[in-house]
Amino acid sequence: MSTGTIQELDQDECRELLKVGRFARIAFDAGDRLELLPVNYAYDDDTILISTSRTSGLATIVDRRFVLEADHHDDTYQTGWSVIVRGTAQEATAEQLESFGTRLPSSWAGATGASTHIAITIEEIGGRRVRQFAS
Image (cartoon, rainbow, N blue to C red; front, side, top):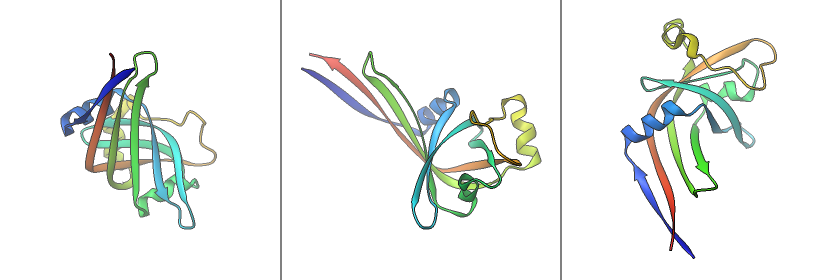
């Protein structure tokens, strides 16, 4: 039998974990249904930047409620963390794109048609870490 602990993460820990991650999921209301899509992201200075096609459903988070979840887990050691972000999204400005420089995210799947970068400004952030201990 094993036991574990769940630890709530403070906002600074959540931000540090976002810095090391590169993959997340965004859930949003697509009008007639809920969507959950994977994204590559970059994080800096309370802004999460994602890249997508201008015509994708993901581009609609600019006008919709959404939640972003980044996580990591290690099956061998039964540990992991999860960070949840809620915020506002807008098309990234030239200044934001310039500040990210060579760290701009790009889609692993590639974008069909014209692409755009969306900047997510964090309004709420929280997270948890789980550790499993053998007994």
